[in-house]
Image (tube, one colour):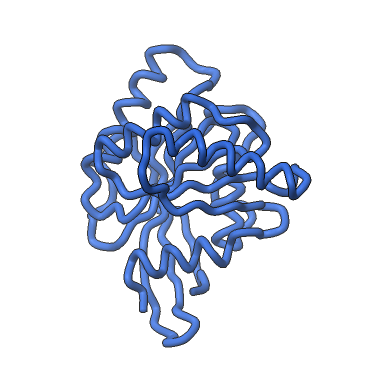
Length: 207
């Protein structure tokens, strides 16, 4: 699958204001400053599609992007939504805002009926963080389909990335009998792009 067009559509403060749920949807979430916007831009091959910032917590709304993709074998065109969600964890904002973000994120994840899969982004440079594991366990309780994407792999030596992924997987295995799909990515050298697009294509049935 290849993305032929990616366009910013709309930003909303609540799930009930999101676009009509009439096509497959894939959402991206992670701790603040995990490299979410850079990954989205890399996947869509569009440098400034999602806004990147050095300041954690800049994404504060549910951001929808309209995607047009083509199956490389059948040449079939498909339309779907990509969603950039606010980060969880640390952000330079008030407790009141963080609480409202939490409700907004939960409502979206649990109520958005066309959500095919949620991509949970993990910074590959760091040791396993309990906040990430707690969030993943919450998704399990809610029975939400998701995949894990390790970001910023280019900032590590290859051996370190492998170790970090293994350590995180081992930490998750304490709670899960079967691990979700796991991807390793780099927005700089486009590592993981083909694998992620293939996963989206199969999950949405774009054959």
